Image (cartoon, rainbow over all chains, first blue to last red):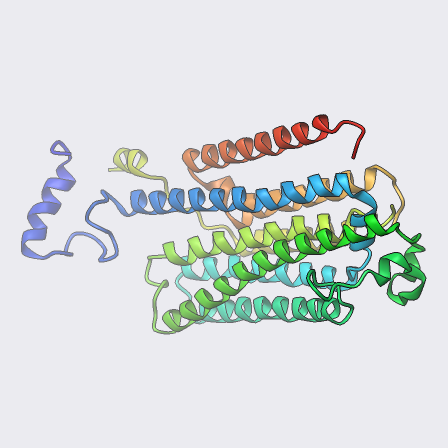
Amino acid sequence: MSDSPATAHGALAEAVNPHGEHPSYLRHHFQSVEQQADTTNFAMWLFLLTEVMFFGGLFAAYLIYRNWYYPAFVAGSHQLNVGWGTANTAVLIFSSFTMAMGVWCSETRRKNGLVLCLILTFILGTCFLGIKTIEYHEKWEKHHIPGMHYSLQSFLNPASDPDIAQYHDKPLPLDMARHTELYFFLYFAMTGMHALHMIIGIAILGYMIFRARAGAYTSGHVTFVENFGLYWHFVDIIWIYLFALLYLISRHQ
Amino acid sequence: MSEQAQHEGHQHHVTSPVLYIIILFSLLVGTALTVWASFIDLHAWNPVIALAIATSKAMLVVLFFMGVKYSTKLTKLTLIAGVFIFLGLISMTLADYMSRAWGRW
């Protein structure tokens, strides 16, 4: 530390003018803006890895139960609407793109562009939740939400359910049909936890839009936008896997 | 000064919007592809293909949208170590569950 002339000089300058020698957003326990940016980036990745482990537990539970109660999980999966799932995947990919463009606007100091990108990301995130609500409502109407009012009708008598006519499902025996409730429990746990991440992300986006309009993030300090972008893209990746595992892999069994 | 900068941190990389647009379209094509593949009966290969496409999409997001391709060695190493441990935990858990009740699921 003492052999660095920049630090010694900085300490001297600080006594006169606290922020004369470096940008005001450089915290004093870092040596340079680059070091500060690398450190926060590293911390963000550590946080995202804990999130990977958290969702990983849910994915592991899903894979194990899908192997144990395979016919129930296939029948449960047939209840999901692939059209809505695909639409939501596209919406989320677009929102990741607008977020990446937001980071670019922040890096190249385009205030209006950044505000626009953040607003678009906000709108697309809200669209995703809207489509998810339509899907959840469908499950509510058909009594496919685990609990007291859960209905086995679509699984004991698939012919009575016009939504799954295309799959020509055979009726499940009662004990296997009951395990479809487990599929829907995991479906709501995984998509619900993902939706909670979206809601938190949208709330932070609202705060960022407010701050960006006041000129924040476009004066060289991009760390907050960049790290939020990492979070938002991570949530996108979780959905990419949820879409494949919940909607797509059981269509032909 | 430049030597010092190399030790303290790396220069901030700015990815061009053109690359972001290319990634956007690749991801949309990947989504169309995986939905299309799910309509074809490939038996045991359906899940394999769906997960392979999902993983390539995730790779594009991680490398370009999240900028890992241009990040520090520390970030790359952290990510690889994390994913490695995650896959280890998943495969060991699955191996245990499958072998314990072999033939009785």
